[in-house]
Amino acid sequence: MELLSDVSTVDHPICSSCTDSVMEELELEIQSVEKECVTYEYFLKQFKKNLTDGADAETVDLPSLQKELRELEEEERLLREQMKDAEGERQTLLIKEDFLKMEGEKMKRAEEEYFRERAQLDRELTELEDEQDSVNYQMRVSEMVLDKLKKTNIFNIAFHIWHQDQFGTINGFRLGRLPGSPVEWPEINAAWGQTVLLLYSLAKKMNFTFERYKLVPFGSHSYIECLDDQNKKLPLYGDGGFKFFWDSKFDHAMAAFLDCLHQFKGQVEKSDSGFCLPYDIEPGPARIRDVHSGASYCIRAQFNSVEQWTKALKWMLTNLKWGLAWVVSQFGEVSDQ
Image (cartoon, rainbow, N blue to C red):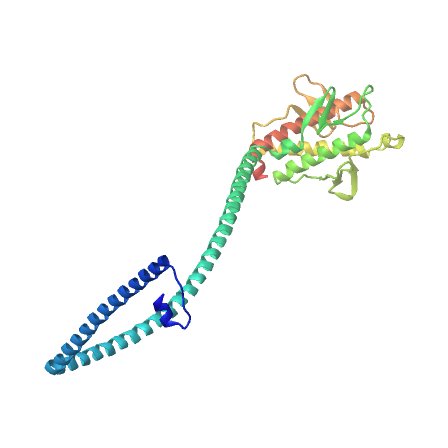
């Protein structure tokens, strides 16, 4: 309390406990200051010692220190040059790195483009392989069809000669008439058209030309030309009218056709002496005769019964079928025709 009063003009009354506390704090501060002083004294002694050691060293080995300094400076210079070179190399490497990055990007884009093109080519290849498989399959089917066609004769397909009751038929068309089966004339005309076309095709296949007559296949209006009078045409078609039955051109046409069939038979016999038809042909009277029974029928319609006329036409178609079979056997298959 006296201490405080000395410091200030104002008296400071204080209790004993507070005074003790203040004193303890002051003692602690004094101890701290004393420690700092000891520390300062220690560092001061060290400093003075270092100064003394340094002064002695300069006096003793200064040239050595200068040499070491120069070496250190030279080493620093070299290191700086190396650092400069290294910096240049680093810049070069950075440039190369940027270039390689760009090249890498190009390569990446090229690789992506390559894989896109590869995928497209793979798809196209798959499509081509599928197309090739399809073509190969079509080729196999075509070869099978061709092989089948080679074994098939076009004459047998185009001209089917058969019979229906008392009628001879060609491609389903009946040739002739009967009282109980009045065949319409358009069907008879169509049958004659097919018959003319068949004999014409057989002769052409054999390179054979008929004498006196020329066959002209013209569908349901086929006819025969007389070579000695080309203006004379013998029709192998009719309408069944009253004038038709009194017109002899149709009969002359059928007789001329029978004559052509007889010439065809003679030409075949020149090549094959063993060939014969099931029914003999007598071109003069225009008759067909069965060699076994001796029966013969005229192919003309006038002054003849429809039964005999129809029978003669049926036998004529039978002879034509035999001629067709011989041509097929001699001249091969459809590929040769």
